[in-house]
Length: 98
Image (cartoon, rainbow, N blue to C red):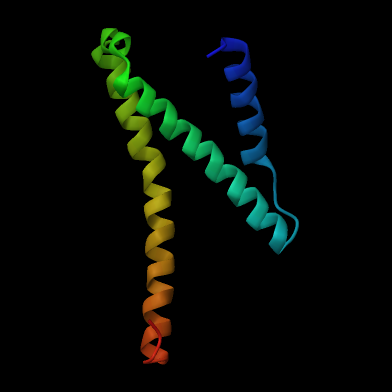
């Protein structure tokens, strides 16, 4: 990967994350775009895992990676729990809901 193109992609991702959606459709579109940012980070971590050169990283580097992934996962888990709760309450109100 070219450092300049990666740096540009990171800058665009930061801009995207800072944008406020304007309506329901924009929320969906921006959420899908942010999902792509998350997926590209996962792909990077996968490349890191399979790249033998990355094993030259220090314990501090791996600690930073681990901490960052854990911190970023917490809001995603909160979101899943929120919608699971909504689904459960809907199922309680409508017994035929799956």
